[in-house]
Structure formats: C-alpha cells, structure tokens
Amino acid sequence: MDEVIDRIREEVTSGRWPVGTRIPAEPQLVEQLGVARNTLREALRALSHVGVLDVRHGDGTYVLARDESQGALRRRLELADLLDLLAVRRGLEVEAARQAALRRTRQDLARLRRLVTRRSGDGTVDARVEGALDFHTAVVAASHNPLLVDLYDAIASASSAGMRQAATDPALPDLDDDPHTELLDAVADGDPERAGTAAARHLDILIHSVRHRLP
Image (cartoon, rainbow, N blue to C red):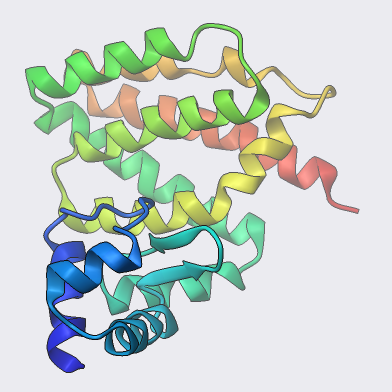
C-alpha cells in the first residue's frame, strides 16, 4: 500500500492534481495504478487521515493539501479564531504585495488586470468573494515566494467565511469599493510601500467587519 500512497502523493505534489480539485474516480484509479480496489481505498483513507485528501461519499475525493505538513496546518487553522486568522492573513498579504511590486512579471500583471476587470461586475456574494480571493491569490503568486504562497493558500481557505460575512454586512463599506485597483496600480508601478498600504487597507475593512459582527 505504501507504493500506492507514494504514487497518489506524487500526483498531488507535482500539481497534476491541484488543491481543490476532484481526483479521478475509483474505477479509473484502479486501472491507472494497477491495484486492487481495497488497496486503493486504504491508500485514500490514509491520505485523508493526514489531511491531504477529503473523501466525500457520493461525491468523490478532493485534494485538500499538497502534502502532510500543509494538511496539518489546515487542520490547525480550522480550530483558530477567525480574527487571529485574519490578522495573520493581513501580515502575509502586506508582505506579499510588497514583494509582488518588486518581482512581478508582465504575465503577472496581465493576470491581475483580467481579475480586476472580471470582479467589477455584479454577482452573488459567493461570486464576489471568489473573485476577491482569486485576485489576492494572484498578488501573492506574483511575489514569487513559494513559502508565502503555501502559507497564504491555507490561511485564505480557512478565512473565506469571514469574507462572506463582510460582503453581506449592510452597515459597512461595500467590498466592491476596496482598493484592488489601487493595489494593482502600486504593483504595476513597482512601488512596494503603496502596495503594502493598499493590501493592509483591504484587510482592515474585512477585520473591522468580522469584529463588528461578534457579540
């Protein structure tokens, strides 16, 4: 079974099965890996136990993390206080924005511009939250710092509920007015100070919203 676990793990760590996606169905994996169904199920359960996979009966198996260490981090984050999560996320986004301003490529800027344009239209709360997360994830990716990317992926996933709370709070500024364009301009201009300030302002709005909703 260890060999089967290693082969599945390789599909995940290589990025061929990205985090958040559903892996091939059981019959396809049995044929692809050349193993018995029971052996495959044991391997999937083992990787589910360490937080790499999520076996959803009736729906399939999804990738939760790239490796066991990221899986352990995600499990720890699930137990964390939301305001603590957002405070850590704020620090990561500010530093990532600063690094992105210094390291971004033309491809990074093109992707960020597409995401800003895409999220400017109307949509459901879930669509708006997803658009905001996609944009900020792209900023972090533009930092070209793999450790920041890994940490941010885990933090952003665990704190996404807070963004939905903020997006539906009528007493606070609309998140469509947040400084995404300002952040993009700062990154494009290669100005790390402005980029960090814009990233901080967005998270300050979100943190204020979550704190506002606490009893």
